[in-house]
View: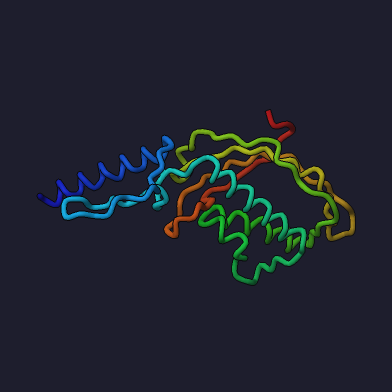
Length: 190
């Protein structure tokens, strides 16, 4: 068997495994013991670059959003320190940089949490834009207007309504990571 043929067979096997995982077949069932003519297949369902299921992307979105909110609320984010593990566990690359930039701006402007919380109004999967990394992309509408922040001059400021687009991939450690995160203030979700 040539190297080219072996590579093609491996790629075809990986495609079948990923397709079976995506359509709901369980590739984690115990395999029969190997025999000289039978080799167990690799489970590539959580390999870097494999498609991330919607539910896992949503869970990661909720975790990174809540952790970012808690960092702001606690006032313990220090821009001079390494990125908090509560964010690095769920975000990397551009997404992590965007979350840290947001927290750094709030910290440098001496904006502190006063009261309230946010609400996630909607989450839906959308096609991944060409300028995003490959992966599953979510569009979320979040209502941050229930939060009141104290500005550096002592006045209170209210949060905003925002739509975010975020993209998710499996990382090399097989965890789901948010790899892109961007948003804009809106008047309404739809």
